[in-house]
Image (cartoon, rainbow, N blue to C red; front, side, top):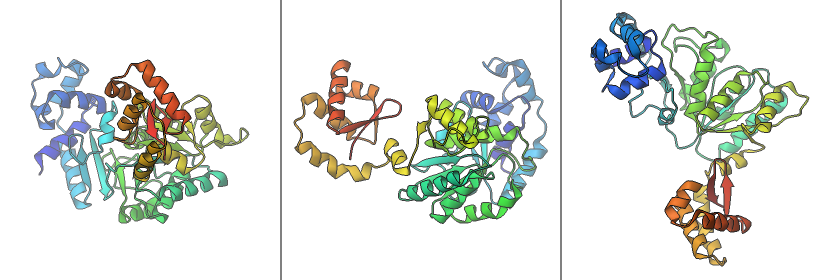
Length: 368
């Protein structure tokens, strides 16, 4: 029996110890085994742990359950990904509550360079279906990983569209990997795994798809991706939770607008109207705003500069933006060594000349 894995699983089974507390503990101890071996007096002194949680750790005895889980994952060739593992999704580490341990069945790279989550209502319209299919078809022009929640509706359409367009796709589920919910998506889940995608969860086997598990699942959908696209949702839909979480994780959120009379566009229209999402009309817009066109820009950038009468400040800023896809205004100010007011004036002039463009989050990038 793998002793490290045994303690890693056991850590997730301790009463009163959630993802946030586990992260705190791992900041203080080298590994999960060290947490179980720590003295009660040391544990309770840790801010965020205290006496009650320290007692829960020291009184934990259910290693049999952890042993059962190891047998299960070995039998079905499931990969356990502990928070300190190299293959653990690194984007989740930027969230305040990353899952301590993930269970993964599949082969897609969870640290792919470009990841987009696509979610929406179960009760989709023909408009929502068509937009989802078109969006993913257009995104297939770049190497991208599609993430969704394997639920009825838009989620299912997103996964199927990804497979059709030969894109890897990950389904994040709110239950253990001994079942697939909804049952009707069992064959779809198998196809996703077989087509270089996968199924991901933080829940152990024998965990049922209870209602309160899905908001927990949604935070992984939001945190795993660079951007989240909301296709259709009511104002109280589950996708609104995903959007809020993505915003909380400082991820870009895009929403598809719809008619004000359509119930399942009410949520997306609300997100757009309240500046909680960027209005999305086509895939190219998302690609450009995310700065995912770098390879197509390089030659054109240098050619354009030859025909421009640039100031010294403008040349410095262009050289900074040539270094990577997009750069934050603070980084430009620091690297340029120019007074912030002069930077602002130079950027404005470059925008007027269509040399650079502004992106969400005070980021800037060079135009094609």
